[in-house]
Image (cartoon, rainbow, N blue to C red):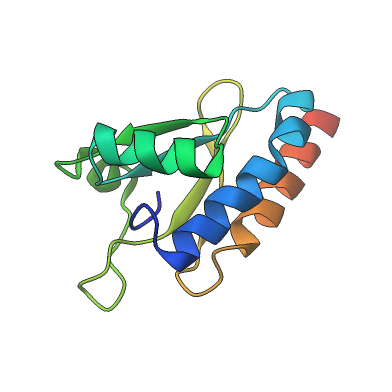
Length: 117
């Protein structure tokens, strides 16, 4: 989950996942981005930055609530990355609003460990 399309942190995070996308795919993983922006915003964001992965619109905040993504400072939508195994079980959670580009490395390290196991 990420806060908002086209903001500096979210763009850096999304482009980081874009740049590592083939590594995720080679490991058998899929990348999915989720924010409260609508589908039109996601399409524009994905087209603008050539994002090869799916962006889901969580306009009512149901996914955030289901995964327990908390707001930062009580007002900003949280930035949380989840790594699920092939059975859909959450294996890792990384939550950092201030280090958006760290999410890619965290996720990739876990994916590589899961593949090696």
